[in-house]
Amino acid sequence: MRVRPMLAMASVLWILAGCRQYPASECEKYLAAGDVSVRVPMDDSSNAAIPLNDRQVLAGTFAPPATLHVKRAAVQIGNSGGAAQGKIALKLCQDERCTIGRAELAGSKDNDYLPVTLESEFALQQSGGVVRYELARESGDDKLVVWVYPAQGKESLTINGNPESKVLNLMLYQR
Image (tube, rainbow, N blue to C red; front, side, top):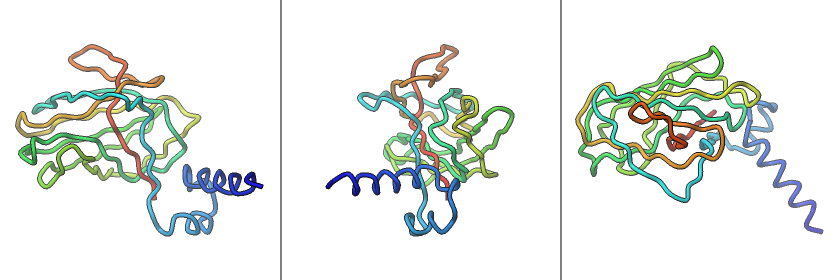
């Protein structure tokens, strides 16, 4: 019967989705000391590049995709073939808890994820409120874009003061 292998695979996926909810021995068994990554919910059927200029801030929200202890995040950027310079900051908040992380654009890959190490671990609760985020360009030129996608639910993004049903392509990592 195929039911048993499917149940086993479902169990592995459940453990990978929120490994901190389980004993460390289970996490190590399935992860082999790797990260768990969860992408913010989005409709990836289309996307758009939004410029992020010096001192500009994009703010948005998304529904928590899982219960995670987030150590780092990543945002999908376009850097004009490696030409973009400067620094970005990513702030994540849920309920009254917040953390921030920063990343240099030097050495980043075009149209790829830019890793952002957070100053402190962020305890994301799936049963908690929506996650609020701010992506700020702390310094740099006009050669950076961030990739946004259509939202699937509670996600929103404020672009030039207007809330839109879009979301940044954010990846959340727990260890």
